[in-house]
Length: 155
Picture 1 (cartoon, rainbow, N blue to C red):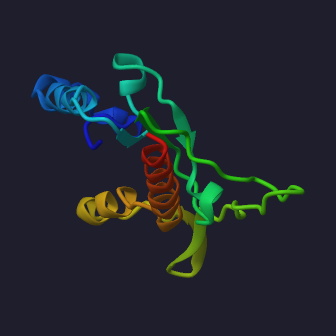
Picture 2: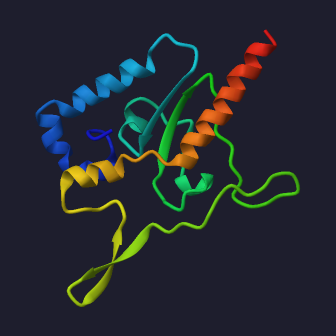
């Protein structure tokens, strides 16, 4: 995703020139075309929506209980969209939480807002931005394993 995500668009010219973006596109497409029954490709908002196809679903961590905002695209093969509830209903409990994407940071005597995904060190910033949120991971594991198990029970 490092060479495909639109959050790094300011570096696209260099990544195109040195071949990193083309390599990333080819890797994504190789994965997308694997001959396996169930597949999900996950990436933040990226150029693959126009090169490959629109994602099947775009989710946010706060849909699944993590109080962060980071749009994540899912391209699905033989898997259903993840389910979540933005509010309580008669039959389903709310799964989403309030978004808290910013925190205060003190610089000298001043306080200012900063994204929790920003850091001056590019290696630390990359690690922060590539985080898989526990709520999304849990939803993927539970929902898709149940789907595959139930689907295979009735064959």
